[in-house]
Length: 116
Image (cartoon, rainbow, N blue to C red; front, side, top):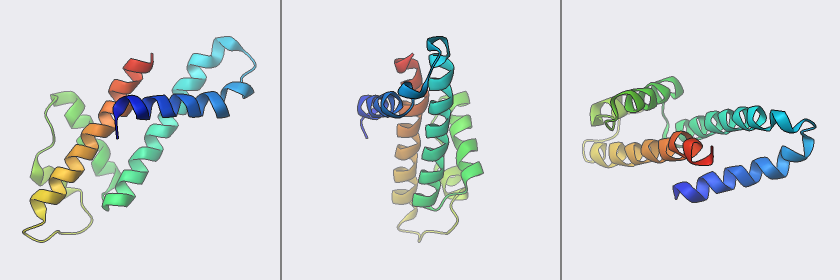
Protein backbone atom coordinates (compact mmCIF):
# COMPACT_ATOMS: atom_id res chain seq x y z
CA UNK A 1 0.00 0.00 0.00
CA UNK A 2 1.23 3.49 -0.79
CA UNK A 3 2.44 5.23 2.39
CA UNK A 4 0.78 8.57 1.62
CA UNK A 5 -2.52 6.85 0.83
CA UNK A 6 -2.44 4.80 4.04
CA UNK A 7 -1.55 7.81 6.17
CA UNK A 8 -4.22 9.96 4.55
CA UNK A 9 -6.81 7.19 4.92
CA UNK A 10 -6.04 6.90 8.63
CA UNK A 11 -6.18 10.67 9.12
CA UNK A 12 -9.52 10.79 7.32
CA UNK A 13 -10.81 7.95 9.49
CA UNK A 14 -9.75 9.86 12.62
CA UNK A 15 -11.45 13.02 11.38
CA UNK A 16 -14.69 11.19 10.55
CA UNK A 17 -14.96 9.03 13.65
CA UNK A 18 -13.10 10.81 16.42
CA UNK A 19 -12.93 14.52 15.73
CA UNK A 20 -16.67 15.17 16.17
CA UNK A 21 -16.49 13.57 19.66
CA UNK A 22 -13.66 15.79 20.90
CA UNK A 23 -14.90 18.64 23.08
CA UNK A 24 -11.58 20.29 23.93
CA UNK A 25 -9.46 21.32 20.93
CA UNK A 26 -6.32 21.15 23.10
CA UNK A 27 -6.70 17.36 23.37
CA UNK A 28 -6.76 16.71 19.61
CA UNK A 29 -3.06 15.83 19.47
CA UNK A 30 -3.37 13.37 22.38
CA UNK A 31 -6.54 11.88 20.91
CA UNK A 32 -4.86 11.45 17.54
CA UNK A 33 -1.84 9.78 19.19
CA UNK A 34 -4.15 7.32 20.96
CA UNK A 35 -6.02 6.66 17.72
CA UNK A 36 -2.74 6.13 15.80
CA UNK A 37 -1.45 3.66 18.40
CA UNK A 38 -4.72 1.75 18.17
CA UNK A 39 -4.50 1.59 14.37
CA UNK A 40 -0.88 0.47 14.63
CA UNK A 41 -1.87 -2.33 17.03
CA UNK A 42 -4.72 -3.41 14.73
CA UNK A 43 -2.31 -3.48 11.77
CA UNK A 44 0.14 -5.70 13.69
CA UNK A 45 -2.64 -8.11 14.62
CA UNK A 46 -3.97 -8.12 11.06
CA UNK A 47 -0.52 -8.78 9.58
CA UNK A 48 0.14 -11.48 12.17
CA UNK A 49 -3.10 -13.27 11.34
CA UNK A 50 -2.77 -12.80 7.58
CA UNK A 51 0.76 -14.19 7.43
CA UNK A 52 0.45 -16.61 10.37
CA UNK A 53 3.07 -14.81 12.47
CA UNK A 54 3.64 -14.62 16.19
CA UNK A 55 2.51 -11.05 17.03
CA UNK A 56 5.16 -10.53 19.73
CA UNK A 57 7.85 -11.85 17.37
CA UNK A 58 6.61 -9.47 14.68
CA UNK A 59 6.78 -6.54 17.09
CA UNK A 60 10.36 -7.54 17.94
CA UNK A 61 11.30 -7.69 14.24
CA UNK A 62 9.83 -4.21 13.77
CA UNK A 63 11.64 -2.89 16.85
CA UNK A 64 14.93 -4.39 15.70
CA UNK A 65 14.46 -2.85 12.26
CA UNK A 66 13.80 0.56 13.77
CA UNK A 67 16.88 0.23 15.98
CA UNK A 68 19.32 -1.10 13.38
CA UNK A 69 17.72 0.47 10.29
CA UNK A 70 18.41 -2.84 8.54
CA UNK A 71 15.62 -5.04 7.17
CA UNK A 72 15.10 -8.28 9.09
CA UNK A 73 17.11 -11.30 8.01
CA UNK A 74 15.31 -14.10 6.19
CA UNK A 75 15.91 -16.54 9.06
CA UNK A 76 14.53 -14.06 11.59
CA UNK A 77 11.38 -13.56 9.53
CA UNK A 78 10.92 -17.30 9.11
CA UNK A 79 11.47 -17.70 12.85
CA UNK A 80 8.25 -15.85 13.71
CA UNK A 81 6.09 -17.93 11.37
CA UNK A 82 3.69 -20.35 13.01
CA UNK A 83 4.38 -22.87 10.24
CA UNK A 84 7.36 -24.02 8.21
CA UNK A 85 7.17 -23.14 4.52
CA UNK A 86 8.62 -25.56 2.01
CA UNK A 87 12.18 -25.11 0.84
CA UNK A 88 11.08 -23.48 -2.42
CA UNK A 89 8.69 -21.12 -0.61
CA UNK A 90 11.03 -19.84 2.12
CA UNK A 91 12.60 -16.98 0.17
CA UNK A 92 9.29 -15.90 -1.36
CA UNK A 93 7.47 -15.93 1.98
CA UNK A 94 10.29 -14.11 3.79
CA UNK A 95 10.52 -11.46 1.07
CA UNK A 96 6.75 -10.86 1.10
CA UNK A 97 6.66 -10.52 4.88
CA UNK A 98 9.74 -8.27 4.91
CA UNK A 99 8.08 -5.97 2.38
CA UNK A 100 4.97 -5.84 4.57
CA UNK A 101 7.10 -4.98 7.61
CA UNK A 102 8.78 -2.15 5.70
CA UNK A 103 5.36 -0.92 4.53
CA UNK A 104 4.10 -1.03 8.12
CA UNK A 105 7.05 1.09 9.29
CA UNK A 106 6.59 3.52 6.40
CA UNK A 107 2.95 3.97 7.35
CA UNK A 108 2.90 3.87 11.14
CA UNK A 109 6.33 5.20 12.09
CA UNK A 110 7.54 7.34 9.20
CA UNK A 111 3.90 8.20 8.42
CA UNK A 112 3.41 9.54 11.92
CA UNK A 113 6.35 11.86 11.36
CA UNK A 114 4.70 12.88 8.08
CA UNK A 115 1.35 13.46 9.78
CA UNK A 116 2.82 15.49 12.63
